[in-house]
Image (cartoon, rainbow, N blue to C red; front, side):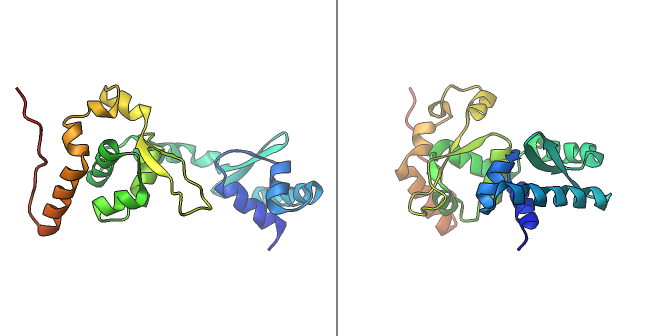
Length: 196
């Protein structure tokens, strides 16, 4: 595999600009070799003409970005992805994270019964859910998901305990009843504390 393709991969997955030094560390190459490969990569993108990507350079930092020619289309797409209405599965997931968080992805998927990777990603892009803890290289210590301050601000509440029927809906006992009823195919309402 060429240094140029390694650099391109790193630029593609990075959400922020990378320095020549950081690229050299990540590829295990010296800075001169990285600089040379980067020059080749820049020349390749310049020669392509109509590409969906460009390599931006600012001093010692470089970043892969979408082409300025597609800026309006990309902006509209991201606006729809970020600010469009939440789908029912996204609302369900957000509700579970709000009432049961922090919880792991595995716990969330056990409650919902489906893979939640894409939904969690979209909720994180919207700034409604965030991760805490966990280690990428240690599956025994998975990250947990919780709602963000933006979520609280949007709903106009100070903390998740202020959500409607929080105590009833966040209790393990009521969740277990809901899961059992769901498995049996019957609707079940959680017990709510008596009000005076």
